[in-house]
Length: 304
Image 1: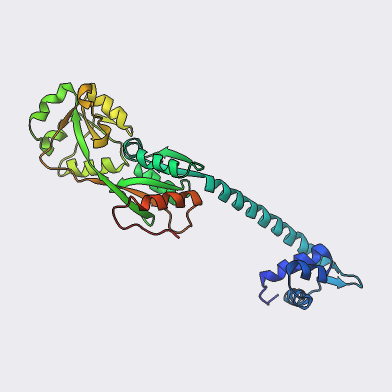
Image 2: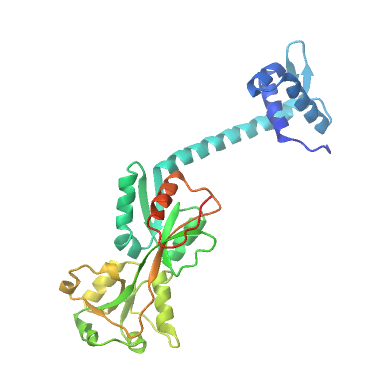
Protein backbone atom coordinates (compact mmCIF):
# COMPACT_ATOMS: atom_id res chain seq x y z
CA UNK A 1 0.00 0.00 0.00
CA UNK A 2 2.31 2.72 -1.26
CA UNK A 3 -0.24 5.33 -2.30
CA UNK A 4 -0.92 8.18 0.12
CA UNK A 5 -4.45 8.06 1.48
CA UNK A 6 -6.56 11.18 1.58
CA UNK A 7 -8.60 11.05 4.79
CA UNK A 8 -11.54 12.51 2.87
CA UNK A 9 -11.75 9.11 1.16
CA UNK A 10 -12.49 7.50 4.52
CA UNK A 11 -15.37 9.91 4.99
CA UNK A 12 -16.82 8.93 1.62
CA UNK A 13 -16.20 5.24 2.35
CA UNK A 14 -18.04 5.55 5.68
CA UNK A 15 -21.06 7.25 4.11
CA UNK A 16 -21.30 4.71 1.27
CA UNK A 17 -20.94 1.75 3.64
CA UNK A 18 -23.48 3.23 6.07
CA UNK A 19 -26.12 3.69 3.36
CA UNK A 20 -25.15 0.87 1.01
CA UNK A 21 -25.57 3.33 -1.82
CA UNK A 22 -23.30 5.61 -3.84
CA UNK A 23 -26.19 7.89 -4.76
CA UNK A 24 -27.36 8.12 -1.14
CA UNK A 25 -23.86 9.03 0.04
CA UNK A 26 -23.52 11.60 -2.75
CA UNK A 27 -26.80 13.25 -1.70
CA UNK A 28 -25.81 13.43 1.98
CA UNK A 29 -22.33 14.69 1.17
CA UNK A 30 -23.67 17.20 -1.37
CA UNK A 31 -21.25 16.01 -4.08
CA UNK A 32 -21.72 14.25 -7.40
CA UNK A 33 -22.01 10.48 -7.74
CA UNK A 34 -18.90 10.33 -9.97
CA UNK A 35 -16.93 12.14 -7.24
CA UNK A 36 -18.04 9.54 -4.68
CA UNK A 37 -17.21 6.67 -7.03
CA UNK A 38 -13.77 8.15 -7.69
CA UNK A 39 -13.01 8.45 -3.96
CA UNK A 40 -13.93 4.79 -3.46
CA UNK A 41 -11.72 3.76 -6.42
CA UNK A 42 -8.85 5.81 -4.99
CA UNK A 43 -9.17 4.09 -1.63
CA UNK A 44 -9.38 0.65 -3.20
CA UNK A 45 -6.32 1.38 -5.32
CA UNK A 46 -4.43 2.57 -2.25
CA UNK A 47 -5.15 -0.74 -0.46
CA UNK A 48 -4.94 -2.80 -3.63
CA UNK A 49 -8.17 -4.61 -2.85
CA UNK A 50 -11.91 -4.34 -3.46
CA UNK A 51 -13.89 -2.82 -0.60
CA UNK A 52 -17.37 -3.07 -2.14
CA UNK A 53 -19.28 -5.51 -4.27
CA UNK A 54 -21.38 -3.66 -6.84
CA UNK A 55 -24.95 -4.90 -6.82
CA UNK A 56 -27.95 -4.07 -9.01
CA UNK A 57 -29.27 -2.03 -6.13
CA UNK A 58 -26.47 -0.31 -4.31
CA UNK A 59 -23.24 -1.74 -2.98
CA UNK A 60 -22.21 -4.24 -0.32
CA UNK A 61 -19.00 -4.39 1.72
CA UNK A 62 -16.49 -7.14 0.97
CA UNK A 63 -14.87 -9.01 3.85
CA UNK A 64 -11.96 -6.57 3.72
CA UNK A 65 -14.37 -3.68 3.49
CA UNK A 66 -16.22 -4.86 6.61
CA UNK A 67 -12.94 -5.08 8.49
CA UNK A 68 -12.00 -1.53 7.48
CA UNK A 69 -15.50 -0.24 8.21
CA UNK A 70 -15.37 -1.48 11.81
CA UNK A 71 -12.38 0.77 12.43
CA UNK A 72 -13.66 3.74 10.46
CA UNK A 73 -17.02 3.54 12.24
CA UNK A 74 -15.27 3.56 15.65
CA UNK A 75 -13.15 6.51 14.56
CA UNK A 76 -16.27 8.42 13.59
CA UNK A 77 -17.84 7.60 16.95
CA UNK A 78 -14.81 8.97 18.79
CA UNK A 79 -14.78 12.08 16.60
CA UNK A 80 -18.44 12.73 17.40
CA UNK A 81 -17.77 12.26 21.10
CA UNK A 82 -14.87 14.68 20.83
CA UNK A 83 -17.00 17.18 18.95
CA UNK A 84 -19.73 16.98 21.57
CA UNK A 85 -17.21 17.34 24.38
CA UNK A 86 -15.69 20.44 22.81
CA UNK A 87 -19.10 22.01 22.25
CA UNK A 88 -20.11 21.33 25.85
CA UNK A 89 -16.80 22.77 27.04
CA UNK A 90 -17.27 25.90 24.95
CA UNK A 91 -20.82 26.35 26.20
CA UNK A 92 -19.61 25.94 29.79
CA UNK A 93 -16.65 28.25 29.21
CA UNK A 94 -18.93 30.91 27.82
CA UNK A 95 -20.80 30.93 31.12
CA UNK A 96 -17.94 30.62 33.59
CA UNK A 97 -14.49 32.06 34.18
CA UNK A 98 -11.88 30.52 36.48
CA UNK A 99 -9.26 33.09 37.49
CA UNK A 100 -6.19 32.80 39.72
CA UNK A 101 -5.11 35.68 41.94
CA UNK A 102 -2.77 36.09 44.94
CA UNK A 103 -4.49 36.95 48.22
CA UNK A 104 -3.05 40.44 48.44
CA UNK A 105 -4.32 41.32 44.93
CA UNK A 106 -7.67 39.55 45.10
CA UNK A 107 -8.60 40.89 48.51
CA UNK A 108 -7.52 44.49 48.19
CA UNK A 109 -6.77 45.54 44.62
CA UNK A 110 -8.93 43.49 42.27
CA UNK A 111 -12.28 43.63 44.05
CA UNK A 112 -13.43 46.74 42.11
CA UNK A 113 -12.50 45.05 38.81
CA UNK A 114 -14.38 41.89 39.77
CA UNK A 115 -17.42 43.97 40.72
CA UNK A 116 -17.27 45.80 37.40
CA UNK A 117 -17.02 42.51 35.51
CA UNK A 118 -20.00 40.98 37.31
CA UNK A 119 -22.06 44.09 36.65
CA UNK A 120 -21.16 44.05 32.94
CA UNK A 121 -21.60 40.26 32.53
CA UNK A 122 -24.08 39.03 35.16
CA UNK A 123 -24.60 35.74 33.32
CA UNK A 124 -20.95 34.65 33.73
CA UNK A 125 -20.01 32.79 36.91
CA UNK A 126 -16.69 34.33 37.99
CA UNK A 127 -14.65 32.07 40.26
CA UNK A 128 -11.28 32.96 41.74
CA UNK A 129 -8.58 30.65 43.09
CA UNK A 130 -6.01 31.96 45.55
CA UNK A 131 -2.37 31.05 44.88
CA UNK A 132 1.07 32.62 44.72
CA UNK A 133 2.22 34.13 41.43
CA UNK A 134 4.46 31.26 40.33
CA UNK A 135 1.63 28.75 40.80
CA UNK A 136 -0.80 30.95 38.86
CA UNK A 137 1.61 31.21 35.93
CA UNK A 138 2.04 27.42 35.93
CA UNK A 139 -1.72 26.78 36.09
CA UNK A 140 -2.55 29.26 33.33
CA UNK A 141 0.18 27.82 31.10
CA UNK A 142 -1.10 24.30 31.83
CA UNK A 143 -4.72 25.17 31.08
CA UNK A 144 -5.96 24.58 34.64
CA UNK A 145 -6.96 28.25 34.89
CA UNK A 146 -8.65 30.31 32.17
CA UNK A 147 -6.45 33.30 33.07
CA UNK A 148 -4.90 34.93 36.11
CA UNK A 149 -3.64 38.00 37.84
CA UNK A 150 -0.06 38.29 39.07
CA UNK A 151 2.16 41.09 40.19
CA UNK A 152 5.53 41.81 38.68
CA UNK A 153 8.30 40.88 39.08
CA UNK A 154 7.04 37.42 38.12
CA UNK A 155 8.38 35.41 35.19
CA UNK A 156 5.33 34.85 32.97
CA UNK A 157 7.29 33.13 30.20
CA UNK A 158 5.45 33.13 26.87
CA UNK A 159 2.08 34.06 28.35
CA UNK A 160 0.28 37.16 27.12
CA UNK A 161 -0.38 40.01 29.53
CA UNK A 162 -2.21 43.26 30.14
CA UNK A 163 -0.33 45.61 32.52
CA UNK A 164 -2.69 47.22 35.02
CA UNK A 165 -2.22 49.38 38.15
CA UNK A 166 0.93 49.88 40.20
CA UNK A 167 1.01 49.57 43.99
CA UNK A 168 3.49 49.52 46.85
CA UNK A 169 4.30 47.33 49.82
CA UNK A 170 5.25 48.69 53.22
CA UNK A 171 6.38 47.73 56.71
CA UNK A 172 4.00 48.03 59.66
CA UNK A 173 4.52 47.49 63.36
CA UNK A 174 2.30 46.86 66.38
CA UNK A 175 2.59 48.64 69.72
CA UNK A 176 5.64 46.59 70.77
CA UNK A 177 7.62 48.05 67.86
CA UNK A 178 5.92 51.44 67.48
CA UNK A 179 9.08 53.21 68.61
CA UNK A 180 10.69 52.25 65.30
CA UNK A 181 8.52 54.78 63.47
CA UNK A 182 10.38 57.82 64.80
CA UNK A 183 12.99 57.68 62.01
CA UNK A 184 13.67 55.92 58.70
CA UNK A 185 15.12 52.45 59.13
CA UNK A 186 18.13 51.05 57.28
CA UNK A 187 18.16 47.70 55.53
CA UNK A 188 20.51 46.39 58.20
CA UNK A 189 18.04 47.34 60.93
CA UNK A 190 15.16 45.72 59.07
CA UNK A 191 17.07 42.44 58.80
CA UNK A 192 17.39 42.26 62.58
CA UNK A 193 13.66 42.71 63.20
CA UNK A 194 11.16 39.84 63.70
CA UNK A 195 9.62 40.10 60.24
CA UNK A 196 6.25 38.68 59.21
CA UNK A 197 6.33 38.33 55.43
CA UNK A 198 4.66 36.68 52.40
CA UNK A 199 5.61 33.09 51.62
CA UNK A 200 8.13 32.11 48.99
CA UNK A 201 6.91 31.97 45.40
CA UNK A 202 5.13 35.32 45.61
CA UNK A 203 6.37 38.45 43.86
CA UNK A 204 6.24 40.36 47.17
CA UNK A 205 8.62 37.84 48.77
CA UNK A 206 10.85 37.87 45.71
CA UNK A 207 11.21 41.65 45.90
CA UNK A 208 11.79 41.54 49.66
CA UNK A 209 14.47 38.88 49.30
CA UNK A 210 16.27 41.05 46.79
CA UNK A 211 15.81 44.14 48.95
CA UNK A 212 17.11 42.62 52.18
CA UNK A 213 19.51 39.87 51.21
CA UNK A 214 22.38 41.73 49.58
CA UNK A 215 24.99 41.08 50.85
CA UNK A 216 23.68 39.44 54.03
CA UNK A 217 21.03 36.82 54.70
CA UNK A 218 17.89 37.15 56.78
CA UNK A 219 15.25 34.90 58.31
CA UNK A 220 11.62 35.85 58.92
CA UNK A 221 9.79 34.74 62.05
CA UNK A 222 6.43 34.34 60.29
CA UNK A 223 5.52 33.50 56.69
CA UNK A 224 2.04 33.40 55.21
CA UNK A 225 0.20 33.82 51.92
CA UNK A 226 -2.57 35.58 53.82
CA UNK A 227 -2.19 39.36 54.24
CA UNK A 228 -4.77 39.22 57.02
CA UNK A 229 -2.65 36.70 58.94
CA UNK A 230 0.41 38.96 58.62
CA UNK A 231 -1.67 41.95 59.68
CA UNK A 232 -3.00 40.17 62.79
CA UNK A 233 0.47 38.91 63.69
CA UNK A 234 1.80 42.46 63.50
CA UNK A 235 -1.08 44.12 65.38
CA UNK A 236 -0.58 41.60 68.18
CA UNK A 237 2.93 43.00 68.64
CA UNK A 238 4.62 39.76 67.56
CA UNK A 239 6.62 41.25 64.72
CA UNK A 240 6.94 43.76 61.89
CA UNK A 241 4.69 42.99 58.95
CA UNK A 242 5.33 43.44 55.25
CA UNK A 243 2.03 44.20 53.51
CA UNK A 244 0.52 45.68 50.39
CA UNK A 245 -0.40 49.27 51.22
CA UNK A 246 -4.09 48.69 50.44
CA UNK A 247 -4.24 46.08 53.20
CA UNK A 248 -4.28 48.89 55.75
CA UNK A 249 -7.72 50.34 56.28
CA UNK A 250 -8.32 53.91 57.40
CA UNK A 251 -8.69 52.58 60.93
CA UNK A 252 -5.37 50.72 61.01
CA UNK A 253 -4.07 53.09 63.70
CA UNK A 254 -6.95 51.99 65.93
CA UNK A 255 -5.73 48.42 65.49
CA UNK A 256 -2.41 49.41 67.02
CA UNK A 257 -0.50 49.40 63.73
CA UNK A 258 2.10 51.97 62.84
CA UNK A 259 3.54 52.50 59.38
CA UNK A 260 7.34 52.39 59.28
CA UNK A 261 9.54 54.34 56.88
CA UNK A 262 12.74 53.07 55.30
CA UNK A 263 15.79 54.92 54.02
CA UNK A 264 15.88 53.09 50.72
CA UNK A 265 12.44 53.05 49.09
CA UNK A 266 11.11 49.77 47.77
CA UNK A 267 10.17 49.64 44.10
CA UNK A 268 6.47 49.44 43.25
CA UNK A 269 4.87 46.28 41.92
CA UNK A 270 2.52 46.14 38.91
CA UNK A 271 -0.58 44.00 38.51
CA UNK A 272 -0.84 42.07 35.24
CA UNK A 273 -3.63 39.99 33.74
CA UNK A 274 -2.08 36.90 32.13
CA UNK A 275 -3.41 34.39 29.60
CA UNK A 276 -2.24 31.88 27.00
CA UNK A 277 -1.48 33.34 23.60
CA UNK A 278 -1.18 30.01 21.78
CA UNK A 279 -4.87 29.20 22.27
CA UNK A 280 -7.97 31.32 21.68
CA UNK A 281 -9.45 32.80 24.84
CA UNK A 282 -12.76 31.37 25.99
CA UNK A 283 -15.70 33.69 25.45
CA UNK A 284 -15.80 34.57 29.16
CA UNK A 285 -12.04 35.23 29.30
CA UNK A 286 -12.34 37.38 26.17
CA UNK A 287 -14.93 39.52 27.99
CA UNK A 288 -12.50 39.98 30.89
CA UNK A 289 -9.69 40.81 28.45
CA UNK A 290 -11.79 43.43 26.67
CA UNK A 291 -12.88 45.01 29.95
CA UNK A 292 -9.33 45.20 31.27
CA UNK A 293 -8.01 46.90 28.15
CA UNK A 294 -9.81 50.00 29.41
CA UNK A 295 -7.75 49.81 32.60
CA UNK A 296 -4.41 49.02 30.95
CA UNK A 297 -1.47 51.24 31.85
CA UNK A 298 1.02 49.76 29.39
CA UNK A 299 1.37 47.73 26.20
CA UNK A 300 -0.95 44.72 26.23
CA UNK A 301 -0.21 41.43 24.50
CA UNK A 302 -2.79 40.34 21.97
CA UNK A 303 -4.50 36.93 22.25
CA UNK A 304 -5.30 34.82 19.19
